[in-house]
Image 1 (cartoon, rainbow, N blue to C red):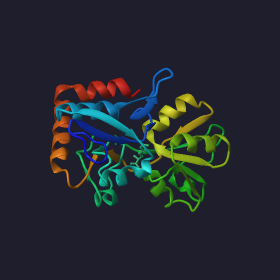
Image 2: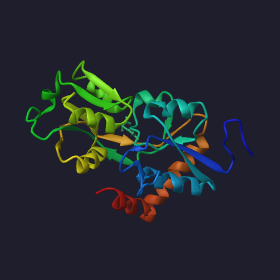
Image 3: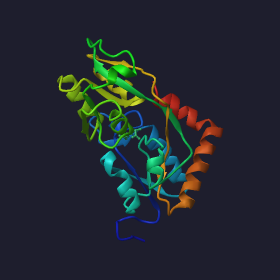
Image 4: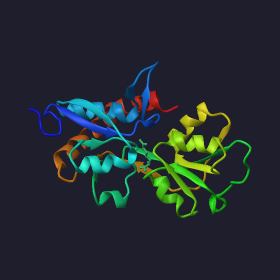
Length: 228
Ligand code: ARG
């Protein structure tokens, strides 16, 4: 049975922004397949619900709107659980603990603590927690649709630093040896899957899948596979 927005009853549509390795990225040799830790978790969520998973790749900034308009069924996108977002969506139990880190050019010795961030020119991903946090330190924040673009700006010397989630930052760093990563005293953040407030059954089933995957060791196996 097809509904107006092209969704069928046996398909579960997950929304993501696939520029966030190792959680979601476009991968494979010459491939355009969307892969990652979140995608593997999402696939098991769909399987347990007796559905096949369809992945919709979109701007991070558009995910919550897409969810609440019914275009997607849930969000798996390294999305941090925040009180602000909880006003418009429900989150699953937290499934990953992360933190923000700073990326700078390798020869830059200016940053040793949080105070050193004051007044710096930040590059961030639009609508991310980094985007919101940056404004506590500076008026100069340039926001991009992906972390890749923010990194490019840093490499071109147009900004002082990139504020980004720890795992994707480490993953970008591996491909950009001219940069370095600085860990500062940022608060931990917890990622959750987001579901429309009108879908409590789906939320329950996501939480059940997560709990089962932790008990079975499947969750840890995925961590070992995706996090280096
Ligand atoms: N954890 C951050 C947030 O929730 C960034 C997430 C970005 N995710 C992505 N797939 N691009 O705002």
